Structures are given as C-alpha cells and as structure tokens.
Length: 206
Image (tube, rainbow, N blue to C red):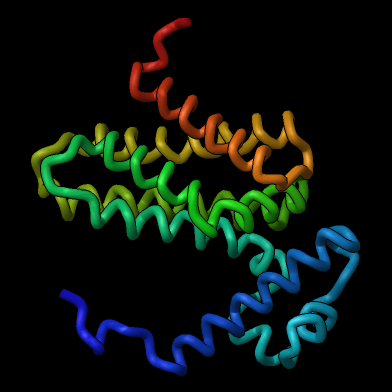
C-alpha cells in the first residue's frame, strides 16, 4: 500500500516540470528550425529558464532531444519490475512495452525519433538509451529470477526486445514520415505488436 511518503515532494514535481519544459522546447525548436539550427540559449529562452538551469538538467540540446526515448524506456522498465512473479519473461516484456505504447510516453518518443532521425549526435544518445535499458532489463531479470537462468539467455532476450522496438520505429518512420496523427501512432503500435510476434514465434518464416 502506498503512503504519503511515496508521493513526490513539491521540489521534485517542480524539477520534473522544469525538465519537461526544456525537453518540449528543444523538440519544438527542432521541429520548427531543424536540428543544428538553434542554440542552448534559444532552448532556455523558449523554456523560460536560464542557460545555467538548462545545464543543470542536460549537457547539450542533443541530450535533451533524446530525453523522450529515455522516458519511454524508463517507464517500460518500471512496468517490467511490477509484472507478476512466474510470468514468462517474454510475456512480461511484451505486455509492458505494448502498455507503454498506449500512454502519454509514445507520442513524444515518436516525435523525438522523427525529428532526430539521421542526426548522429542525437542518434547516439537514443542508442545509449536503448543500450542502458537493455542492461537494466538484464539486472531486473536477475533480481526477479535469481541465478536460475543462463546469462546468455538473459542478455539475448533483453537485446532482442530492444531490437524489435527499434525495428518497429524504423519501419513506422519509413511508412509514415512525420505523421503523428492518432492513426499513425496506432500503426506504430501495430508494428510493435508484429515485431514482438515474430520474436515470440522465433522468427518462423511466413
């Protein structure tokens, strides 16, 4: 049962709001002007914060651009840790990622992916997000299952789940370009389902 001590403090809420305003300002400027066409000072002005405050949260505009990907994956990881004991690991991973794809994290992550696609500095941060999440999944599996599973199975499963997610994003972007309409986001979810379906069946030929 949650208690009052579980609730975030006002300071934590203010910090989260400031961070979100910086991320939204960065993504907005990238959409309007293109990556590389604005400065950290521009982002700070758009977010209503100082340059110093910006650097309290991010080391660069590229890192801020990749933040929605980190947020999406962190939310998925939190959901994975909450899945019931005894549930097959792949079922847990698929259920969590598809659940996150239905909530408020999917659109900002998809927009960040669209705007930054092909821009190497942001792509590196996004790949870092996937790699870090894969490592955290490995740690979460070990925490849940102990030492009962073969390490290669754990690492391969985590890596395959992340790769299926990235594959769905790549195909979706090729199909839909910059479209963030509800029907387009639903197509992204369909592609996620399809990619995980291939994983579930061992990529049997169709």
